Length: 124
Image: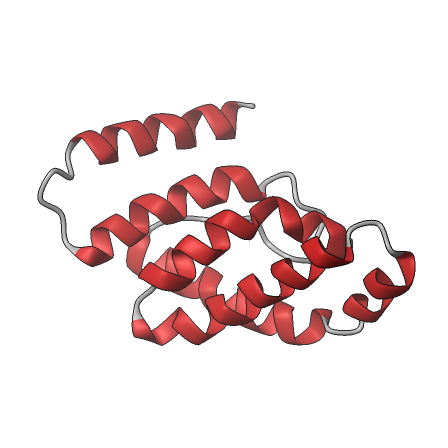
């Protein structure tokens, strides 16, 4: 709860100060909002990825070139998870794709930390 409140405060402060911000700054603000939303995602449950689909799509569009393809992997996986819904067979199939998603997500997390000073939840 404390972490979420801190992220929310950071987002509010950052948004207030970014009236004429660069694309990278806007991405970093959106990334901070994503970090708060992603805190409730269990990385081992493909169905949970649907919770971050809208944010992942937005970040895919605004991401710097170095992680744009990584966001495409994460957003694509989240879209497939949303479509699978509660279908256990489809979710199990998606579970086999977690390796590629984890690799992409780690690249995103590294870039987020280095460029935006944002810690996004880790995938185990």
